[in-house]
Image (cartoon, rainbow, N blue to C red; front, side, top):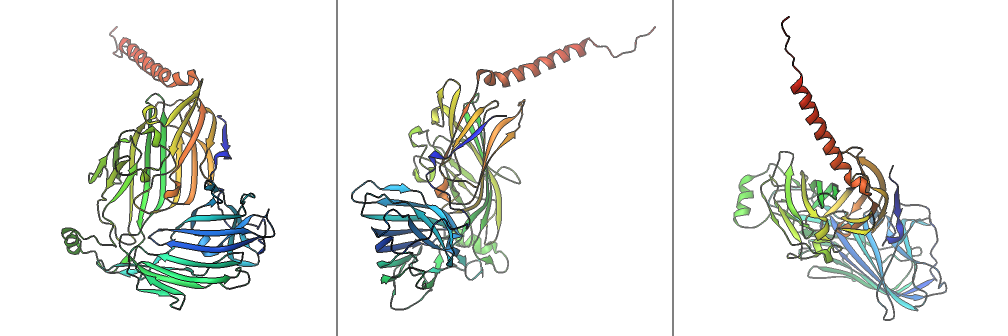
Length: 488
């Protein structure tokens, strides 16, 4: 059986997993915070937060720096990293290490990172993406009603250390915010921004309660999420091609429809070119540059209400996620489902395309019989869409051995299976990667290195030639065989 090796050396982040045992306990005197600013951007199924800490060393200069999340918030966490900037040096990305629940405060979940010892004062920016941090309120609306969402959480600052000052800013998509709490002297609203604070002399969460609040706001576009995302990428040396197919279960997480669907209201909104926030009509998927032969099918068959906009191959841009390349540098697939998708409705479909290995820069020959191929872990669906469960299968050529996998982030599971399709003899080795709670931040490349001998290259044509020769010989033998009964 081919050997598979997992190489963690290229991990950019340490995975944030379920609550576990606390490896270390934060000491409030280890670090001092001169300022803390948390910016929370609320959207639909995905929300983003950036918390910036201005940090000074305390008594424990060699101790790790702890970051505190509320336990409820941490359960929704899909992605997190930390950027450290200090004393004019180039900002550096550092991994976050999950430390589990605080045994003295089960409402707080901790993560840690090791700051450089050379800097006396640094700025740490913790960037997070959350899935399903908000929910619909009301949960049932008429077809033409606006979509309102509500967020509940910390409007105070949760930190293990004393902070001189800080504030929390919540940003909504548009200015329509029917309500927010608390409405006291610390809360102000300006446009689509609600600021809680500034606070002064902020105490550690263990010695002070964290102020809670809520923001009830309008969301101008449908709230969508991907329940399951199943990708299969087949690598073919003979075809100089990667064939990718994504099987997707899409759901509208907005308020459910009150009453029956009105075709008249739907057509009037289309005529006025005014979309209904509760109804998903179309969306775009950005594909890599150089994608070709794109298709869009569902359980019935081919869906013709789609448009494909190809872009030429760009090998120097393959490491950049396709949704960040811009309209002209990435290929695009505009999808319009067979029917409008309202709140609570589901739609399952598949999209696929081909990519050239050589001209696209997706594969490299590292030496005699050694190759490297890069495959995107996922492709974002629409804008700011949560992906609850992602499964990516990378199918290598038949006969590949000494397989090594380089991951850009931690995954929940990595296994090897045998993938059998037409014209195979013993089947192809495949790598199956699975991860829950994903976002567009995970649209990064997975690198796979493997060996493929010259005899393995010839296995498929030899198998085809053998079958063809066997059929030819069988046909010749049947022509010589006379089934008739001869008269005596």
